[in-house]
Length: 194
Length: 214
Image 1: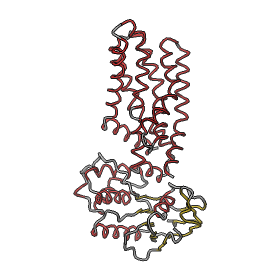
Image 2: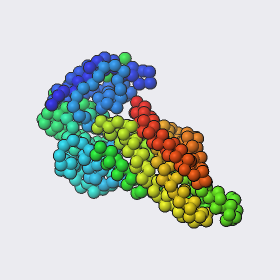
Image 3: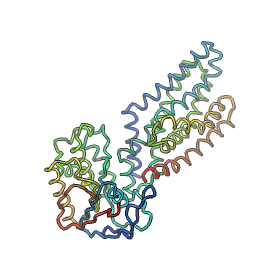
């Protein structure tokens, strides 16, 4: 497995430079936490890492990624397990059904597997989106404010999942303004100038 | 490729389950019913203008779902997830065109049979209308998806969509309605316009979706 590498990445949105010449590498098993005040470019950094936002300069390299953003990308009218299976079957790797059931279990959503996504609460939907990332089997997890809307127990679950993914050689990139305990993570604080 | 088939299947299921197919067909039939009220119950006159009426109604019905083709998926992060998985937005748009046509073209052709009954169209005319719809609706579906991508996220997207889409659909209307009386030349021109829209729309829509992600 290879590392996730930012080479001198500069990101601008609406004519405003959010961050400039940002370089870092996260090795397999590593994690990076991006913090900073609102509007400083944390989410943009995640979107650049996901390849959704083209950087003005520099490049991003790394293996396949899974993205947890603000929107869950799960079809509201489908039952949770089926909505997750839609994405799991599109990802590389065998046994999408098994991966989805394990991910549902790991995010403690088993009692809700047959409930339509639209009936889930904010926190449950957040965990469902996390289950989508867990089930993807992608080496790199990009988590944008993963602790938003989660209760304390669920934040604990999130920390356990991140630790488990890293133990298996995975890479985690987290943008957050809430404290998440990720032992031995690198850290970037964006936005002195803003 | 699997991803694109999965997307076509998903969009089709949502179009049927979400009622978008039913609304579009109901609207199409409603517009065709309006014409006898406006023109009067002169059977000979209705039979003469009927083919054109069906084409105009098809065009208006094609506008109905335009607001819902791209924006919900952009908002819910579905398009982002496809992009993260390395799919080009042009191919996603192409899959959406296929799905939209499947949910719109064949049902519309069925509804045209009912409309022909309401307007008392002769069988030969109905056959020409159906052939025209078969050739023209794929172009109409492509235009709808491209328009939907262009207006995605705008306030009052529905109104803007009409202003963008209807002028571009005029060639389809001219050659579609023209093929009823104009013969094979008009059918060929209809096919050419439809192909042009089909070939260009995925790239226009893809670029518009991509621009919306920035």
